[in-house]
Every structure is written in C-alpha cells, then in structure tokens.
Image 1 (tube, helix red, strand yellow):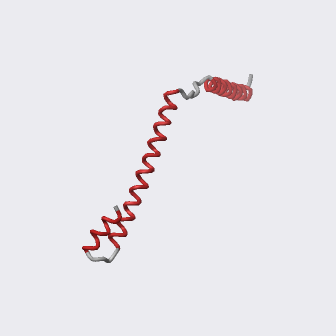
Image 2 (spheres, helix red, strand yellow; image 1 turned 90 degrees about the vertical axis):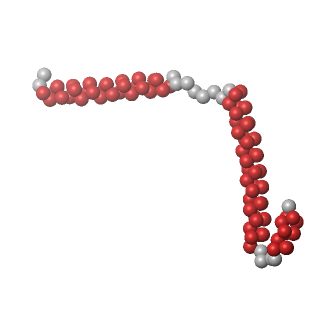
Image 3 (tube, helix red, strand yellow; image 1 turned 120 degrees about the vertical axis):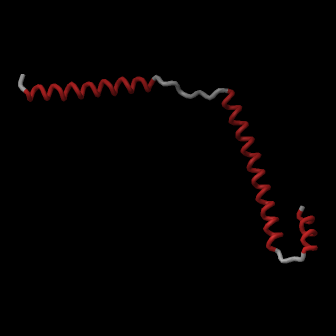
Length: 90
C-alpha cells in the first residue's frame, strides 16, 4: 500500500465514522419523549385565559379613566365647575 492509498483509506474511514455517528444521533432523537397535555396543563391554561380576560377588562377600565382625566385636565373651566364635572363623570 502506498501513501496515496493510505490517504484515501483514511478519508473513507473518516466519512464512514461521520455517517454512523449521525445515524446514532438521529436514532436517539426519534425516541425522545413527546409532550402530552394532561388535565393539570389544561386547567392551568383555562386559569391563564381567565386571568388574561380579567386583565384586559382592567386595562380597558384604566384607559377610560385616563380619557376622563385628560378631558378634565385639558378643559379650561373654572375650579367650581371642575368639581361638578368630576361628579358627573363618575
């Protein structure tokens, strides 16, 4: 065997090792555990959705309050009318 044949043999052996290594790694991935939602996870999701809806209502209420405060702050009314305006907007 000359040096050229030795180099070819080394390259082929190296390539074969990489193919085998990739096959083993891929085989391990196919046997991984998949996510199965259970009843606890579904209950957590329902709770999160309910909390999300509640938070959205709170944000909408706060936005409305900000609009009212902006109207009060930007209006050019006398101070006695301001108290009446606040009471009316409540």
